[in-house]
Length: 78
Image 1: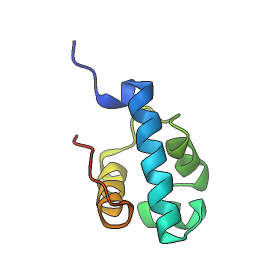
Image 2: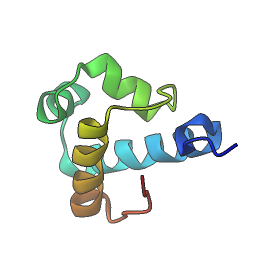
Image 3: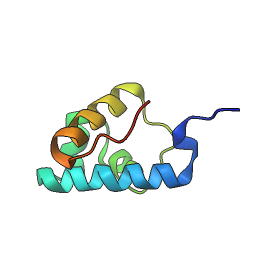
Image 4: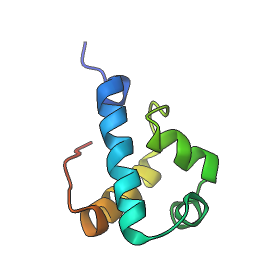
């Protein structure tokens, strides 16, 4: 059975690290990032800590674009 990548805790952790790196490169808070992608600061925190199993498609797409631009990586395919 093929499960989405977010079911893998190692993937979620690595993705969270990249989101945090990107946010820090942008020099913005979790609150500011949440406003840009349409979620709460606590949800941003959950993503950064690898606790979110599957962000919504729209949030994932926004984060991927931002990671590519500010984090230097686009290592995630959906």
